[in-house]
Image 1: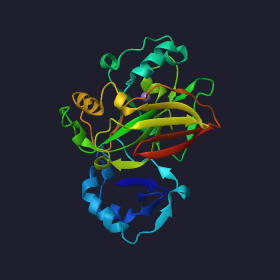
Image 2 (image 1 turned 90 degrees about the horizontal axis):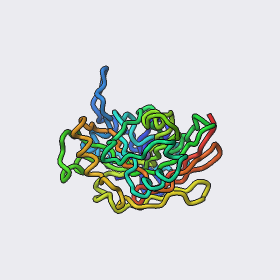
Image 3 (image 1 turned 45 degrees about the horizontal axis):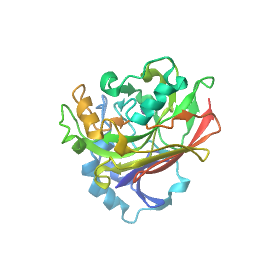
Image 4 (image 1 turned 90 degrees about the vertical axis):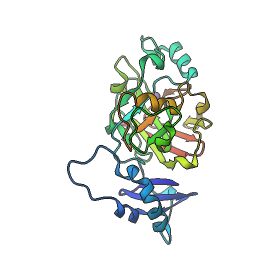
Length: 285
Ligand code: MN
């Protein structure tokens, strides 16, 4: 199942180049009142909603995807967990490029661990990236994103993928510089998720997906999730020994080689096998 959020917080079931408006299925979600749980209610209830979504799809209006505004497939992620330098080819280019490493030693992921991005940086593919520090280098990073579907605490590597609700494309936008990653990568609009959530049952093993990114049609990144240094199941198990992963938490699994700068006016096109494609405009503040 491919679920998108579009226009005015509507829910769509994606079929080819159209979507079916299945917003009515959201009526089945429990009524909430303050204080809200720190989970995403749609993701948390996705198994319960599945038959209601299919029911709502019967006779639903079919809308061309080309004409809608795509929002983040996860509306309320509790946290955005991210893996630094998780492809050897990106480790090598970061070590060699002073514009990436900025005088710092590139430390192996096994040593430096994971980091968190602010949830306020999350948005969908249609809104565009707004460059925050135009005088500095702002890079694209295409990443496979796993969306956590149920609470995960101290889970085993072999069971870790059972906690994934689905996958999407992520852009981990980054201003290069001396600051901590969590600051440089948490700028508003610097976490792009899209085009929609593809549920885990359609993906199976996520370690054979090609990631391709171009800027203004020019090739930049092209690699395969088979080359992840720490695999998705290992990332989830590892993170879960530090904190409970909650439904709707976003897991950015790291970017391969080919990162590079973008400036206002550029268009980033990114696609990952089985997950679709996004086209993201880069704008000035
Ligand atoms: Mn990254």
